[in-house]
Length: 70
Image 1 (cartoon, rainbow, N blue to C red):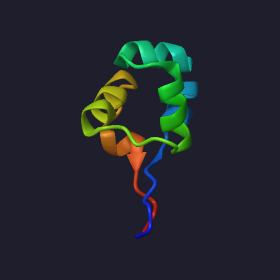
Image 2 (image 1 turned 180 degrees about the vertical axis):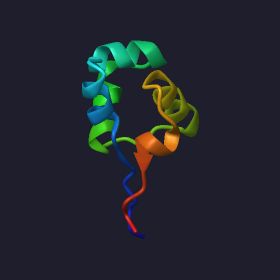
Image 3 (image 1 turned 135 degrees about the horizontal axis):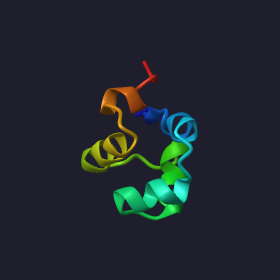
């Protein structure tokens, strides 16, 4: 079975807003290293965490997370 990676725009949006990884991590209650892994696609966030990240970035989940594997 082919593994699906969730493509996201967290880094792009975060940098546009001038937010550091560590600050975003604090906003959503996780470690900076987890934000890094989610940004690079090494880790897939839960739906709950994806919603928290999107809210912290003032975007919709759809604006932040795109499945481009198809």
